[in-house]
Image (cartoon, rainbow, N blue to C red; front, side, top):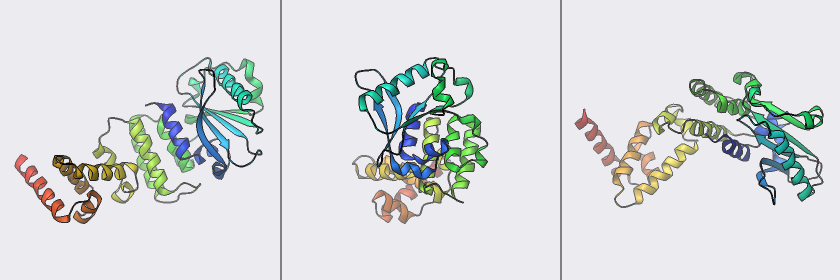
Length: 275
């Protein structure tokens, strides 16, 4: 799993979680735009930057995600930040956060930069020290999925899905949270099959995930292409397994109900013939 890319996507789609991580109100995300920034004329690229969109009163937040030991991380990070400040000359103040899976990965020497840490201009976040997922805001609890081992991650994902259906706050909708859980599972377990992902969600929850919506789109496109009947049959089989009605499948795949019924009957005949 490319950890930096998943965090970039998570903070881009769910910026409120970053502000919860650093102890700020999640609503602060409404004042920022998140992006990756390349420092000109160097090989430096800052993982992520939250840039204020309204006033000079709001600080810039630099974000670094580090999941591998790197003894030079701080010399590189502060070089990147100082070059960015020199080139862009922002009037805003700045802060930085470095996110680690565990404290043991933090091998950088802070000797030359300790004032940045003592002044709390730079914050280090260790995901495994955030506490038990059940006691954390649901957005932060979901982020902890990234560092869990396979068995615990799947169990935690199911617990989080149950929590989503109860109370959701912090500016994140139920659909967004389900898609966030799904995103992490897909990144963390790239070999997991569609059926295994489906099994983690109830039918009503699954309908809100990007996986489900993409599957419907894929099935609809496949159903329109000549010579792709077998792919369409496969899409019908999957949606029948999820408990969808013939009418729902027909609407999703742009087919008639009769076409779906015939495919369902064909699928049933095939299964009986193989038994």
